[in-house]
Image 1 (spheres, helix red, strand yellow):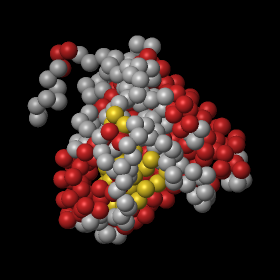
Image 2: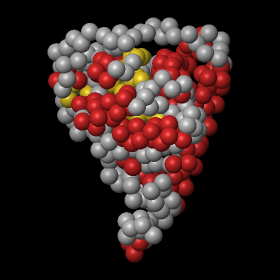
Image 3: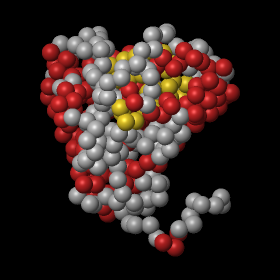
Length: 346
């Protein structure tokens, strides 16, 4: 589909004019619980990781996914275990939604040997090939062509698999996006491009780095269909990406899905760099449509899921997180003598 390319020259993003009342049809309880569990696991993991970073217990810095949980949960819930995804520097949410192990994730953040990369990759390079997580990536837009490569391999094998690439609004300005999108369209590859448009490329509002209101308009240049959804509504994200995944799996080629979302914290960490580029009023307005609260309130109001089931998920996830942190803290640090491990092929 195509839309008019009109530029919004205001310096700050506004609430998305997509399904503001949460009118998407409510799915069955099993789907709601699955979406809720994925979002809560992301929220609790990221909140604890941010706390540990701010307290100085974790080395380096983190790009937290808090606020955008509905996108990872909704999109990845449409995939099979054998399907593959690529991620971004803000990749914890995607890894968690795909089924990554909390213990190995926290161990990696601590720089310990039991981490996914044995303490050598850190926050921006977590991967788990066994679950189809091809890796987070510290280079903006670098995961997009990797997903196209995975889709090419799946098409070559004729195994019915789908690849999904996550990226932000700023990454759609990078050459790798355009090259990958063009190749995927020309070869009719089974890949879904998911743009998590949180309104900012690091600290720069969208209106200051592109003359488009909707990033999804870029798909038309490659003969690719696109869809925009409310990225604060996991049910809406799931519905949009499911159509794209079904199309890709049926041989229809790639689709671009743009989810209008928002990150609650700054570009990195919880306290951030204190750069005055957002107002508290803007942040509070987006938090009013918190994805987890939205799903809980709609599901309970409809009588689809009792509140105690949601409460149990929160409790279980907090316990899992505490155990994972304890595991990570008990994990040994890498031996300096092994510094060349993984550098050369054995």
